[in-house]
Length: 454
Picture 1 (cartoon, one colour):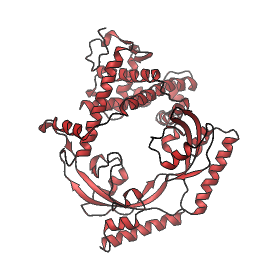
Picture 2 (cartoon, one colour):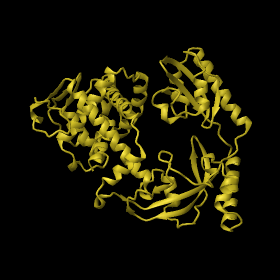
Picture 3 (cartoon, rainbow, N blue to C red):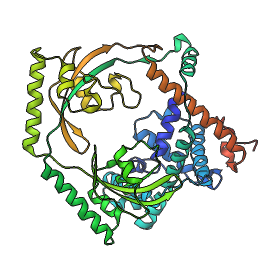
Picture 4 (cartoon, rainbow, N blue to C red):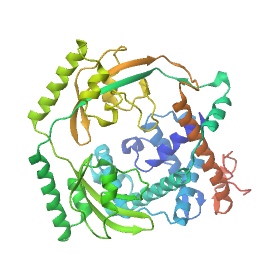
């Protein structure tokens, strides 16, 4: 429960400042003041208020949070940001500006206009308002990068996982909800050479515009289909260990500073890359992703082919597994007979009520073991594909078992070890960092030694 609470507070902090404007308007404002200082960063009384508001807006029970707990988490966030600066962790202005554009769009939707947002936050104009939130976003990104740095090298062994499990009292073992195992067959529409060449030609046109003086980032905002980097103007910082596809890294590491690649293809579509800077072993780059789009005729054929195959399976002319091996166009699951695994854990079991893929949930939630979903259109990156899913097994709710629920136990054990590493780092870093806590919070029972005998 404590772990869940901490993760909840950190999630709230990740969007701190971009709170539900309408919710704030109905909340009585407190007189603002500095309640804590960490290095060069301050925590305001209003920061705590805003975190409460955001928790309510996202559906959390705020009765579980005390002001002391929220202050402690805010202080941690400031410590991460402060140390990120000391460790020369870089967050570029372009990254922050891209993130801000998306967040401000959401705020305008809530408030009705940008003028309403600026007025509510008591800023003189849009420029002052944007500067205010730029600082908030940059601080949060620095904190996030620092936490990633602290946990990236934390590993856990099978023996540590076993000890973690054995140390849980048997009457306190977590319950695992109803689980399900699944297999899939995927059909993708054919994309013609002409459709592919049209994308290559467009990327070459964009590349030439940039060579003639246009901003790469501005082209990203107009053309890229990579939603993960849209907010940062296509920016990535990678090294040779970064988990990008081989074709992307091969091109990136062949470029010189300032050079723009010619269009090239990966499984995600066609790209161009601009290498901005080489920093040690890291490449700081921007990219644009565009994919060729299939015709309606091709879409219709893919759906019909999968409908026909589904009928053959139902008529027992071919097994689902054999059909997947012969016809599925999803390379990750094809050779295993269509068996779907969790990409992060490698587990074949999915807890039904925690499925993040809502399309998949709607396809399988009412199926019995052995039944097959209807042919369903699903996203394929920036394109469309068709899928059928078979439920191969169902496991009722049960107390966590080491053998059967190893991957879930491993995930919790690793997260616990990561949290312990961060807690140890916080304890050591506090000793060498200037900390000041307002008198109002001197009686708080903080998890970390923020008071330092003040």
